[in-house]
Image (cartoon, rainbow over all chains, first blue to last red; front, side):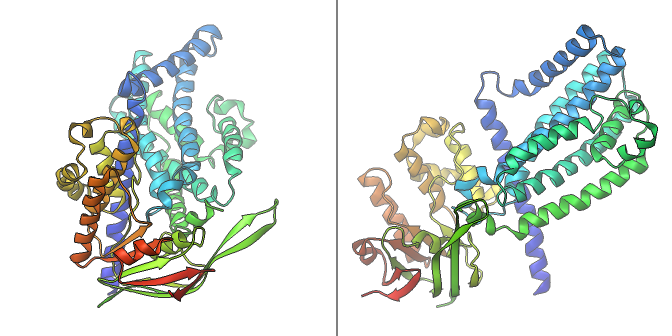
Length: 265
Length: 215
């Protein structure tokens, strides 16, 4: 009996993941239908963003040379993925109101579908970023094979934070206003714009406890400097986000049937 | 007949927020005991706002009771919800697949049943058009066709369906009857005693959050 229960649980997790993925694919398809250029925007949008940052910081402000522009681009691209995905997850359960009241679904599929849809787009963004950096003379060479590892750890970080805020928002809807402010604060302490050397030396150790900073630096090591990331730090972040992602999904699962009532109250 | 679902002393309240920290409780289900068996056709009569939909959602496993227990003995339960998860920008095929998966089918099974769904909903080539261009009747037809293609042991219906024109309504009624004849149990909630008499073989009354034997 116990064995069959475990099998059922495993099967249902796989089904929920497949459902979240299919919702993500359909969500992306639906989004593409809302514009004339459709999926082409997945390439044009990040290319335009990068061009804007290049013009603003590389040409107009002429800040720090090409290396700084590349530094900024890697930071911005990865930060935007994180913040957009967390925001999309934040309102996903309340946004799924109609469906939640009609079908007994695993609530995890709502934030996960948003996160997977953003991750699909980010694959394209990553591609544009790598090509742009290559045009600036930064080639990661064989180390490019390390980049998917960094990408996956960031995805797990997004699942942790995204599912955590998604789980709490129905209890405290004001989070939809609070989360953007915290994300803004997060941007300023995660090394998106600044380099490590402008932080006072006695505070630099604290940056290693910021998983976003560690991920941004790892991506920069690979994509700009063509060197290995700090595997000890990256491995530590990977282990922590794996644990926190599991906990966040567990939290959603724990309150699964509460949400149908909460969103009505 | 095997037992599908048992509700044992089920209570459920909604909290209505009145101020920053204050709220009042509104009791909707107040100690319901109910057994639903395979093949049963049960009607639940109640006025509008009595909490009939809440009761169905408890049976479907959408809500968890505050107190008491809802036990599902392995039944595949479907609340007949039209247009579950529909997206106006996607075409009929994509919407049917998405809705079918949300209702619990695997992608392969949904794909296998798309032709059957297409045939039932009678949308023809319009299945290739975005759902946003459909009339409300056409959407409901597609939704009904998807719901009817599911494998279920217990069908929960909130008020009798009136989908599309007279002919299509007859077709829907025949399809539901066929499901019931095949052994699928039915719980129908309605405010209309006539509808319940037509569709069910026993009727209970739902009032003030409790179930009574109907007069």
